[in-house]
Image 1 (cartoon, rainbow, N blue to C red):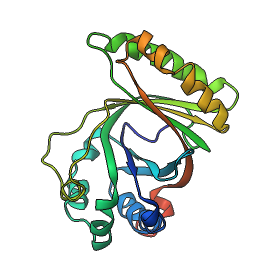
Image 2 (cartoon, rainbow, N blue to C red):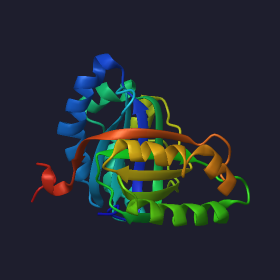
Image 3 (cartoon, rainbow, N blue to C red):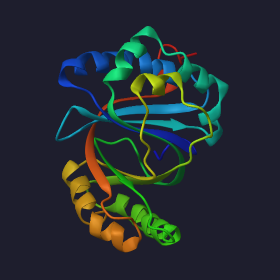
Length: 230
């Protein structure tokens, strides 16, 4: 199925090898259930870079953009658990973007996920958006691919949260392209060619868009967590 809602939180970070096992335990058994209990959170997924398993990508799919500014979400961000307080400083090179879902074609859940961070050149927003819409609507029909999605950062105006303070501040992406596939090689080829740097720059992106390919580790919905279940 496509992305489950009109908004999302997309995040990248690195975890040192010594903390990786505890991080995954915490993220699956405490953090995912905590987030899935927040009204408006529809699905969470954790992925690891296929070339370096210290690198992670996490996506939370939200019912609507207003969820990003909801009191329930803010309460969790400002009141981390003791385990979260322990783990947050180990999130290295954090990029965290609160987004609107602009386009979502085909399916999302897959074995492999390509994730691209990019920025339009001044005056090129419409041209780049048209290119990405046409490309992402067509790619899911190709062998090995099943979905293409475009997110744009639109963070609510709010002071930094306690979690951000523990991490020491986060960077943010601008536009985010996600490409889902059941064959990692097909995702890799699309990121190198159809959605490669030259193609994106020719369509209006600023130089040096950044792309990675991830494999799925854990995907969850509220109904699948003890805290979120009814």
